[in-house]
Length: 250
Ligand code: IPE
Ligand code: IPE
Ligand code: MG
Image (cartoon, rainbow, N blue to C red; front, side, top):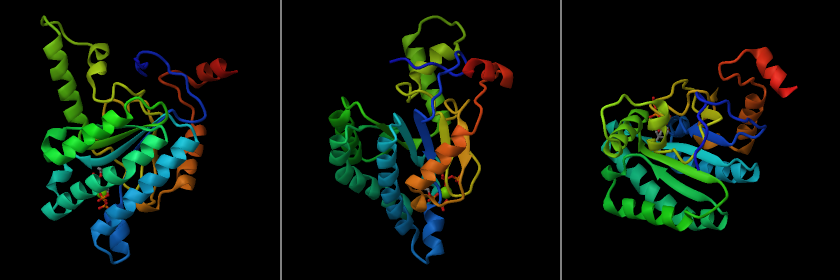
């Protein structure tokens, strides 16, 4: 299915965002505040993921995209990186059948070639198992970077297209790693930082941004509803004037 591009056509927007993208930040600080090792925060963070996935299913959100590990997170101490990888394996092991039972389609996007073979195989198996599910699409962005995405899209396009014509937005967009999803309506970052950190650079062009001071492990269904409430109070203009938007909805 081809989704509309917010820079080409004005999308139809409803009260429940179709696509919510989240930077799940603040695990380390959550743990440090409790005199616990950072890893305890990551473990708690996986529980928060479970809660938000369930809340999105109940609210009939169609796409939930979670930034789990950035292309820059390899810069962290080796011990923390390997712990995060092990957590990823355990979470896949534990959660995939539950997700499958809930009609969730699971996708993992990012440069997966840097992960060990066992993890890569588990990812492919989980994606294959849930590929035909029709409920919520959960995308885990792992070793993902917005710049990596644009460059890989361009390189794949180059392989397909002959001739030296300059490329257009419409040509590049289908090659982005999340071309299967509409652009996020609502972007959430927890943990108090107000930056994008190389997340969905292209796709966030017209997303509504919501920043929360809550550390990710404490983010729950009520916090999600607060974000959706704030989203509903916004006027999404997509370049138009306010009166044009009012004319359209009246
Ligand atoms: C987000 O929490 C999880 C990952 C980046 C893997 P952090 O680990 O960045 O937590 P803080 O920002 O240090 O508190
Ligand atoms: C962004 O968080 C990446 C993830 C949550 C996976 P970071 O904690 O890595 O971001 P910075 O370093 O504060 O920008
Ligand atoms: Mg952080």
